[in-house]
Length: 134
Image (cartoon, rainbow, N blue to C red; front, side):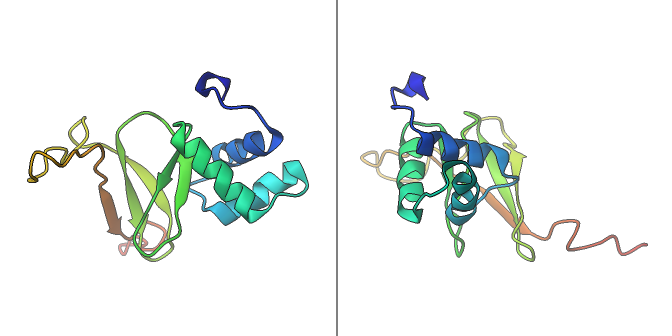
């Protein structure tokens, strides 16, 4: 955190630790519940503020999926995508199929500057679609 020149606070450390510790890609409410275990009291607005700051400095990645609350993960500084189970909502990381950020050469006028492209795979996970042969 100090490398990003952010002041280290109990709230920031608790929120970052919660994102690191929670399985999957937790939403802000789940992060808040975990962070409160450390801080004793933390408002939802404070959690949103901390998540925004941590995202801005590149310690946390915010994942915006259609129809779902924002999800968070520790920034890994790698290009990966996500698979979302339509049935249970689980989200898992998927390695980039081509090894570099996809679709950054969008068919747009030159004045548009694309800095990120996201791929989300939607379907059903193995828990929600058990092997039909057994």
